[in-house]
Length: 509
Ligand code: ACM
Image 1 (cartoon, rainbow, N blue to C red):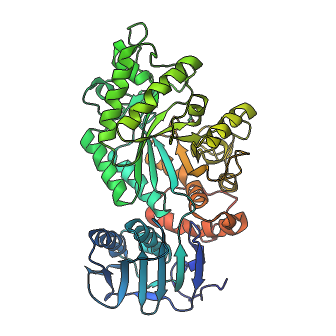
Image 2 (image 1 turned 30 degrees about the vertical axis):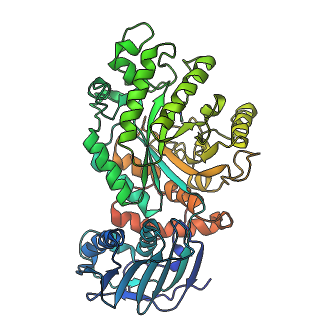
Image 3 (image 1 turned 45 degrees about the vertical axis):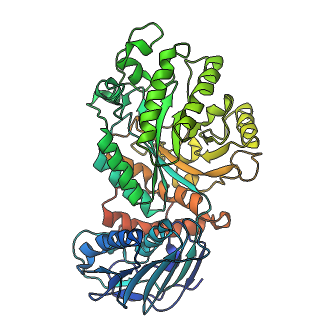
């Protein structure tokens, strides 16, 4: 592939068309960049979605360039965003950049938005700063044609073990959008905290949400706040997948309502990090009233298709009860118009038609457990791949990195990238894998700086596994493209781990 001509004397690195992460389906560089100047317009077609994406782009470009960059429906020189028929699919796009301008074309608004993420990466990293920079602002020249491998490209944030505010979640969403992630899975409930207001069971949030791991004040989202997160995510073409973890991981609920307990006695709130000690009472009818109310209210807050019901580590629920419970709860999700997602232990019960299972096993997971997952997949259960020893973002990078856990081993950057979602669980039928997701559990992660340090640089690699064609995966090439991202993270003020596996620039990047 031809390299972009270098221009001496420019601050920072010139962007390259072939350095985009996730790698596009096809890239054809040309010699002539487009230059964003004071007279550049962002020209959009008439649709409100296109205008919104135009305004979004303008808000990114204006602070650093200092240009007005008006978003208009007419005008010649500039950046054009347009919806048009074409072979783009639901999320794909085409980007043409040359002397006369940059045009992003897509069939759907999501595709335009993803094309704009590519455009950002074709500009010098300094464009991401929030104060006026000297420029100039070349957009690497050439043509990109692109569409994703999988429809599910997710990240999960555990807001239960440590609570994260609306603004903190929005910042994370912006970071996910950069890499074309399209699902934000929010782990809203666990032993240590219930984080979403439920009107019919108000103490879940007011009591169950009143602390967190380590005994801090915790918190919860009001319905209005939660809807704000959902809207913000939607404006970045991410679908929020809310999780209520059942029937285990429920101490916060059990502590809030004595009647949910087998013995009618509410346990104390819990601020430690053990798992597997709590269970809803499968034999009590009130359990199902509770589940129905929670799922009904949550489904009403959820424009997306999916509702995650957990199902992992139900070690205090007998197998028989677990199966019985899931048999009753999966239809409730369907009744409220949603598709259930569960951790892969759900495959040990009777997965309902159409549900998805999220695989979080390891290489060392037993053959029996893997066989159960394969059997469910053969029966039509779709899989989201989140192997803990590859993409659990809460795992330490090495024994010497300061944050996180290590029960699934150390997960350095190469390890998180260099695996095949289709082959990770041997014997899966073709089409079973619906995508990948990187979960970030927060037992040991307390603030947004911690989140960023664990997500960067692993998250872009998982995004690439989800977006880019199978044949793209090549660590030696990827690590060079990844290194080029660091200047962007610095410009955005993102904290990140300077892995020795990656050839970061010698200028401190
Ligand atoms: C999990 O890590 N317990 C899904």
